[in-house]
Length: 521
Image 1: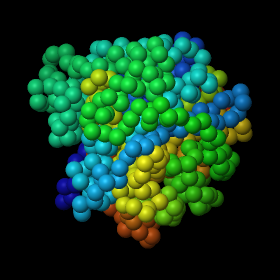
Image 2: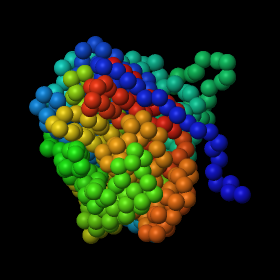
Image 3: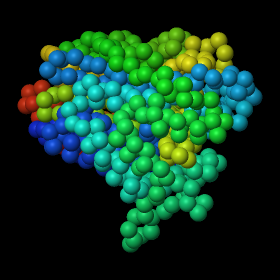
Image 4: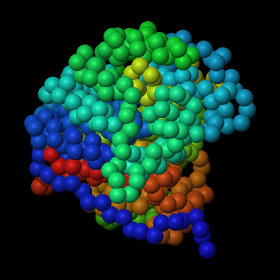
C-alpha cells in the first residue's frame, strides 16, 4: 500500500463572475480590497495597487514593501501591454569575499553550493535592493486614476489591526520558525513568547502586532514611492541594514529605478501571449510554447500525448535557460511569491507577481520600518564564471512569469502564480489548455497538471491516469506527487478572463490554497 498520498477529498472552488471586472489573489481579503476599488470607479491598475499592498500585510511571508515584482499591464483602449520591472539589484558594495563556498548544498530553494553561514539565503547579507514599491508606484503614476494614499489606506488599516493568527498563519510561521527565531524583531512579531501563535477554539482569532509596518505604510502614502529610495524611509532602511552588517546602502536605494518595458509578445494559435521580458521565466515560456505549437489536440481536455508534448518542450526550454540565463536550481521548500490578477469593466488587465523569494525572505524584519526584507541575493549562483553568478550591482535571473493573453486585438485572459521554478510550468499548461485545447476557464483551473522544472524528471499529479504517466515516461523519468496545501508540489496559479462571446468577466484562484479567492468588482 502506498502511504505517500494522504488526501481523500475532491476539492472544487467556484470562480467569480461579474460585469464590472474581477480581482483574483492568493488571499481573498486582499481581493476584496481590490474589488471594492473597482466598485468605487477605479481601474485595473488602481485595484492592483490596493490589492498588492493589502496582500503584503495579510500574507507577509509571501511579499511586501521589502520585496520585488513584475507587473504586466494591458491598456484596452490602446491595445498595448507594458511590463514594469521591479526586480531586485545586488548592492554596489557587495563583497564576494563575504560569500565563501564551504562544500555541500544549500538547504533552501535552490541547489546552489552552500555558502558560509547561509549568508546568501538569510540574514542581512542576503538582502538586495527592493524594487516592489518603485514598480507599483511607477505603474500607478502612468496609468492609475485614484489617489495614491486612498489605495494604500486599506493596507494601513489591516496593518494597524494586526496579522490574524488563523491556522494558515500558524502553519506558515511554524514552517519557518527555526530561522525566524534568529532575528530579534522578527521573533518578537511572529513568535511572541517564543512560540508559534495559535487560535483557540471558541474564542476570537488573535491578531499579532506588526511592529512599525503601519507607520511605514502611512509614510509611503503621504510622501510617495520615492521616499523608500531617497527620503526618510530610505535613511531608516540604510541605518538598520548597516547596523545588521549588510551591504545595502542609501546609495543603492537612491540609484534604484524601476523599468517600464515592452512586453515579450508572441503569437500562439489564434492568440497573442504577452510575457515579462529579460531575466524572468518569460523567455522560457516563449521557447517551450513554440516547441509544441500545433501539436496539442483541441478536445476540450488534455490527452496523454498533450502532457508528453508539454513535458518534452519544457525540458528543452529549461536546458536552454540553464545554459544561457542561469545555473541549475531545484525548488524544494515553500517560496514566498504571490500573484494577483485584475480585469476591470473596460477590459484593462493587470497580471502582477510579487515576492520576497524564500518564505519570509531574508527572515529579517528591520526594526525601524517593520519591513520584512527580501533575500534576493539567493537568486544568484554563488559560483563564479556562471551565466547568473553573484556580483555587485547586478539583476539576477528570477522565476516570475506573469502573462496577459489577447485575441483579435481584444483582452482575453491573464495568469500567473507562485511556486518558484514551478510557476512557468503551470502558467504554460493553463495557457495551452485555454488556447489549444479550448477548455472552459473553470475547468482549466481544476485540471490536474504535471510539473517539469529542470531536474530531468517530471512530477505527475496523482489524479492523472496511468496513460499520462506512461506517455511522459517514454521521454524521461516520472514520479507521482499530490496537489496539497503544503508542501508546494505544484505551482499555485490565479487568473482572470473576459468571455470573448458574452463579454462577462471571470476570476479563478488557486484551488488548493484555502485562503485564495476571486471577487467580482
